[in-house]
Amino acid sequence: MLSCGGNKKDLTPEQKDAQSQSRKIDNGIKKEKDQLAFKLLLLGTGDSGKSTFTKQMAFIYGNATSDFIATFASVLRDNCLDGMQTLLVNMEENGGIPEPIADLAKQIKNASDLDPVTAENIVNLWNNKSLQGALSKAHNANIQGGVAGAKFYFDNAKRFAAPSFIPNKDDTLMARRKTVGIVETHFEYNHTMFTLVDVGGQRSERKKWLHCFNSVTAVIFLTAINEYDMVLEEDTSTNRLLESLKLWKALTSSQFFKGTPFILFLNKSDLFQDKISKVPLGDIFSDFDQVASSPEFSNFNTFEKSWQYILKQFRSHFEGYTFYPHLTNVLDTELCKKVFVVVQDTVVKETLKQSQLI
Image (cartoon, rainbow, N blue to C red; front, side, top):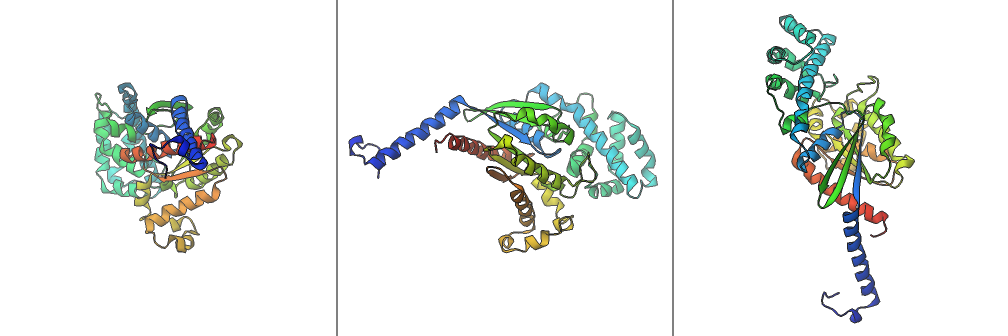
């Protein structure tokens, strides 16, 4: 055994080599942390949670300024009104709006802003059981923030509409607006500088991605696993999860990312767990029951079988260097902290490996 106080001349050649290698790794780690700023590229389809994760990092590491938070007041008002208007259209297309709430629904549909009067109308409409029942069935209605987000917006409509409204942290995380162009967030964690690059996930935004592909340390790819029964907003004939798998395959096989590690976030796990009891995965994917009955899934409950099935699809579509999967809910701050500790460790180790230091 190598003694800390041993004399160098007493060491065997193997021990000297091990000691030299250890020093090389330690120096390499220090050099990487002192000299490198890691660039993490966030990719994925629209509504996968990229911007929410970026906001979490800004809150956790101190870059969420009051001016930044204030910009989401108008976003939340729009989310609330757009969500209710989308739900009403969905009701019209699936059985119609009940006569007792038709006048109220018409006023809301004609509104252009979430003013206090419109907010009062939304609250009164939201208290109607037929509307809440319609929302619970509207998984495929492309409502901003999904069903859970809509409930949050409607419950807080009056607060959002107040002229003096200033969003808090939870409000900001729940706010949904499409990322247009390229948004960079810079922060320091564990004496290491990080740049998160968030780009729009809709098809029309993807042509801009090429500008972000240089000097990428790792790609964080997010997929909203609760959207397995939903279609794209921009193409109602395409399943969102299948679109995500297709994009994943294209990116991981790209020459731009040859040798680049991917970090996969199977996101919105909380919404996914709630949905599979209402819309079983087997209703959407014909091979699910066969796969879920295989020996490798034998010790899993329904939730575990379901998300592991989706992970299996991503494994089969992966054509890159290596990837590290995580089951996530980026609205959960504590979980984001834990996941990012692992991400940081992964990025450092991969960088050292490619530098041939380990």
